[in-house]
Length: 106
Image 1 (cartoon, rainbow, N blue to C red):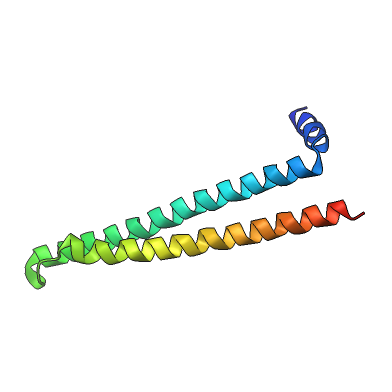
Image 2: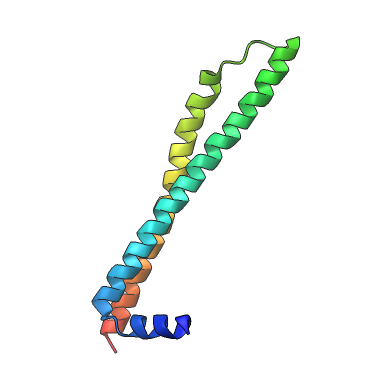
């Protein structure tokens, strides 16, 4: 029932509106992926820092400063997340453009 209604509404969209909707969905997906990747890299760095701090607290190493671990992690997270989000955005926008061009030339 819900699927049939959704199909009818999508079929009723004009090609330009469908392209705008597809573009918005690709942009939203790229933003979500950027946030997930950034968060993942930061969380992994935080866990590595906690491990190093625990070892250092045990007396077998130098004091582990969080700034020494997290500052490079932020830079790495920024670049990794940007690369992932940009890849999705480029693939999505190129795909939408190709699909729009193909639908305008029968």
